[in-house]
Image 1 (tube, rainbow, N blue to C red):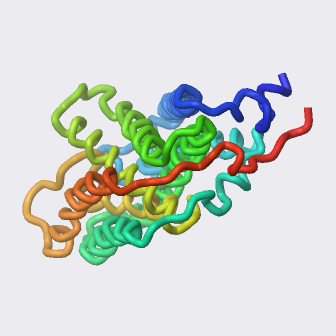
Image 2: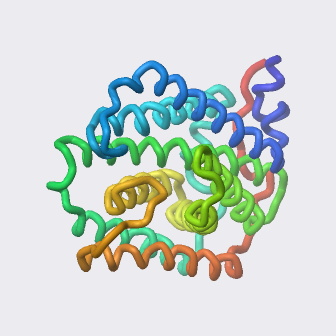
Image 3: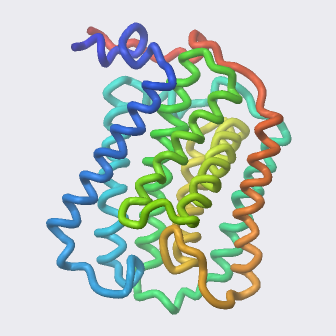
Length: 281
């Protein structure tokens, strides 16, 4: 059994796309199970008006399930000895053009913070939503850009393949949003956007040298986007102020940058260069 958890010669050290898929699927099973458990035990506390109608709603529908998922993926990385490597310096340097990804993701966040109508939310909702965003960033980045990228690099894939496959896994994670609604046009648009957002997160991780900045940028993107539209995976209704209108262009900027990045990503990390530790048998 110890061989399964060892990182140098065991199951996870061998890498491969299907192991990355296994981690993603395992996370989703745990996240959906946690959502069901929290809903059954605490669902009676939810009030009408949507996710952002109360602090309790945000906590039950978003924070607790994603928080459990974040703890589980952290525990998994700790069990196989990958906490330091995943949070450590990237084994391949970024390129100057990659800093554009930081700007592309950052400017909508800034304009949403300026344009949000804070008074329209009950007390505490914005703060709890931002905390939730942090856990979203931790969980989803560690699954895809953390464990996923490490496993793909271990298989010896070129960095372009690593970026594409990890972003595909990231987009696939959002298929769960189709539960109950089906594959609506909004869900299909979401899958395209999340794929290219994943490319941006990969590029940010590369150019900053650390997954931490991808976690931070991701953790600020989701809650500000949710709050600016008033829901999850929904488009804003009615007229918006100039700041939120400018921020909305960020969705297209992410997609455009992601397309261009696919032609520019280069490099390869040889499995031996990752220097992941071996756990004792």
